[in-house]
Image (tube, rainbow, N blue to C red):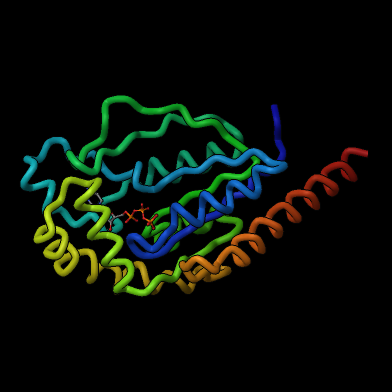
Length: 219
Ligand code: CTP
């Protein structure tokens, strides 16, 4: 069995702040010499399939209680021990879990992203590097409107109502204060390549040093 330490990067930030895009860019750079797998916390929304569509559409998806934290923590611990997991698949249009879960292989580096990944202590204490993506509220709202209408089956009015009743209040209470847990804060704009490069270089450096340490111990 491979006991090399697994490095967990946590990427948090408000809705539509660009977490997935930053996580992917970091992953692509680290992939040059390490295996990387990317996990979205969105897959760990609880299964609300017992509720009607109307009830589901009006749930508070921005509160920590909406996530299956126990399953996510158990899975992260498995990945840190290089044990493969099965990840639930979440459907944003039906607001439910799909029947099929997908096998997810462990890797040298695991990147987890989610709005509340730095808010929930059981999750963020497992992170080796914690990043918060800071994007202004107006840009996030515009991005969210475009995305939710195009990809997530919501109407303009519904996105605005959800934003004002749950998304924004929960952002202010839970997401924004979690910036305190971050090791680094990355602004989301086209010129942030240097920040991404710094993170990827640092992670590759840490992993190289870990390897050297392990080799010293084995001699
Ligand atoms: N959400 C929703 N309906 C659901 C489940 C979740 O509208 N059935 C919304 C929540 O309100 C929450 C958001 O999904 O605010 C979380 O996803 P988000 O972080 O916006 O998606 P990402 O693609 O990870 O965003 P980005 O990469 O742009 O940061």
